[in-house]
Image 1: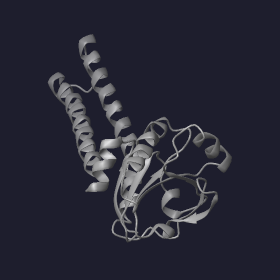
Image 2: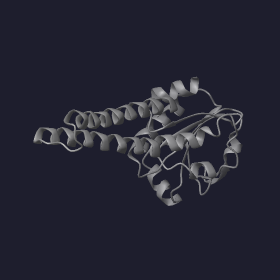
Image 3: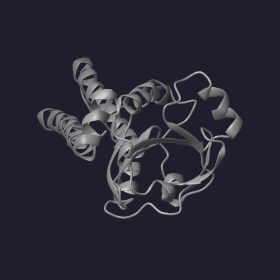
Length: 208
């Protein structure tokens, strides 16, 4: 999700929560008592409580899986994402993000256990294969063991750079997968999205 979409989703969920709370308060006011006095009123109260619980759960999930990782990356917006070292499994060598300065980068943080990640990787590979721009690169990094990632990437296209990292302040703070970070030619963070995306999105994202 983009930061704007997350913001609107949270507004919708808060509205759902307020609607449920108002339904409970209105029912109590109409009955002039805190607890319902009939089976119909108990059913209505239970329904409102269920909606409220669902809304609270959704708010927690959005905050944990989208808002927190997006906020973490956006702290770096306009800044250089430095000192990111990784093991380049595509070229079988030690590597670092600084080596790609002068190129536009999609940095994709993923995991082999993540279903949306696995669905997203083919589109990223196709995007790179279709691109005529030699100054564009896709780097997909996982914090899993080298052997786990190497075994998995034998089964997928390998037009992009696959790698593993051990420790980085920003990436360590991201608990959700996948998350994609757009980095400009100067090495500065330009944008970020949480959750899987498709070919069309990434194509437009890079062009913009």
